[in-house]
Structures are given as structure tokens and as C-alpha cells.
Length: 196
Image 1 (cartoon, helix red, strand yellow):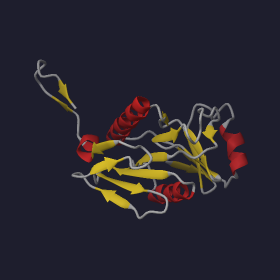
Image 2 (tube, rainbow, N blue to C red):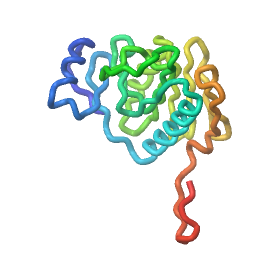
Image 3 (cartoon, helix red, strand yellow):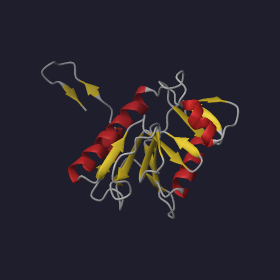
């Protein structure tokens, strides 16, 4: 992430981000600073895409809401975040928001940490997600761990042999971490194809 100054209010950020020169770029407002979302590396991007697909499939099968990707923004208090994936239940917001930054915090936010992310920024975002009633899954690709930050509960750290459970937010959602962190392998034989 690239930080730009000066310190802005949420209203100033909302005006600034809608300027024509900024419309094609993704920005967050963290602690009054504009933070441009930078291109992730392939490892982090692949993991984010896999989790997004798994969550979206579950949500669509059960018709319980909708999922946004790394271009769906949310207003979290006075800050503006763009999680790598987020889930919003129909019970909390019957129709998707048409705002650039949804004024309703999601039920679930997924943050896949990449080399361009600041630990300080991720920690701040998690704190604000929890305060807004949002559960945050912080995915650590290098460690092959997922931290589950649920409001009012201690942090749960899941490791490679554990299973990620949707709990009361995504009832029935369950996926082994080995599936999330597995690496794509291409076999040399054309007849064998590609294993994921």
C-alpha cells in the first residue's frame, strides 16, 4: 500500500475519491490517510480468489446475501476499507448498496495480507471491523494461517491442519486450510492436465 498525505476527514475523502482522475483507482482511508490499494503478488491474489469463490458459492447456494471482491468498498466508522472479499447478509441489508463505499459494514471481511500491506494498517482495520460488528478473517499466506477476529471473542488462529468454519455468520460453511493454501501444480504430461 502507498500512503499519501495530508490527513483527511471521511467527507473530504469521499469527495476526493470521486474525482475523475481517481475513479479508476482503489483507495482506502485509514487513520485519516489516503492509502492506495496496490497490486498484490500472485500468491496472495490466488488465495484471495480461492476464498472469494468458496464464500460466493456457499452464499449463492443458500441465497443468504451477496459477496464483494477487492473492489467493493465499505464505510467502517469514519474510515473507508476495501477488503479482498466481504459478505453481506440479506437480513442486514436486503438490497446491495449502490454507493462507492457501502454505508453498512459487512458481516464478514477477508483481508489477505500481501507484501505491500502494512501490519499497522491491517491491525487498525481489524480493530475497526470488530467495533463495527464485522468478523474479520486475516489470511497470512507465508505463515499459512488465518486469524479469526470476531467481535467480543478472543482471536482464533487457524493453522494448516485446521478447518475454517463460517460459524453463525456463514452457517454450514467449512473448508480445510489445506484447500485454501494449496499450490497450483501443472503436470508436464498434457494428458494429466492441471491439478489445483
